[in-house]
Image 1 (cartoon, rainbow, N blue to C red):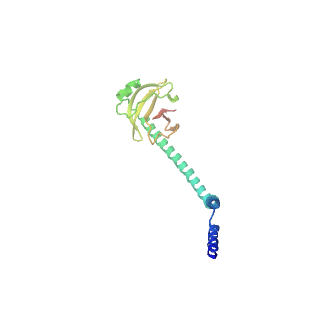
Image 2 (image 1 turned 60 degrees about the vertical axis):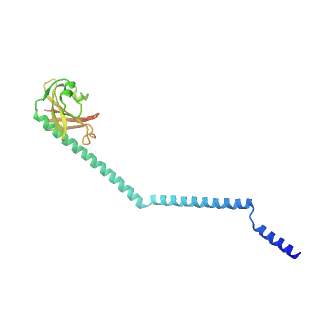
Image 3 (image 1 turned 180 degrees about the vertical axis):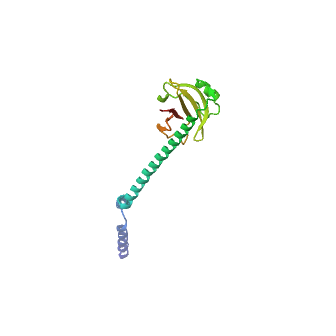
Length: 205
């Protein structure tokens, strides 16, 4: 009898130590919630560290330094472009003053493209205002900054000689915007039109 009571007591004790399914699920949910809260806290702390870094004097100094470098690089780039434009304008003036006769006498652009086979581009009839009222009468080969070019010969209504230079747009001249120069009593206009670079020169009094 005593043994039977003892067994029942031991059995009831171990049953009381077991977790019910509902209790076990509740504990698991609490653990998952705790893990999520821990992760969220870590993320929040990490974000706080980032924002703290952005607010530090070191970050502000670095940002100012990068801004100054960018502006300085922009000025250098603009200065280089101006130097290239000026060098091209001087070369155009030099060729213009030579007043060499045309290799090909024609008023037709189709003929120019058929005959000037050394060119790596097609000679175009530009619609730029600087060419208004001018008459084409011939062309010859030349070069601009080491690149082969066509020197187109024009005359205005008064018989004055005007020379137009065309070459393919390349890494040296493709970023050049419309430019105007007055060098050695010669007016020079430069521009990029499509895939071609143009420069025109005329004498001024």
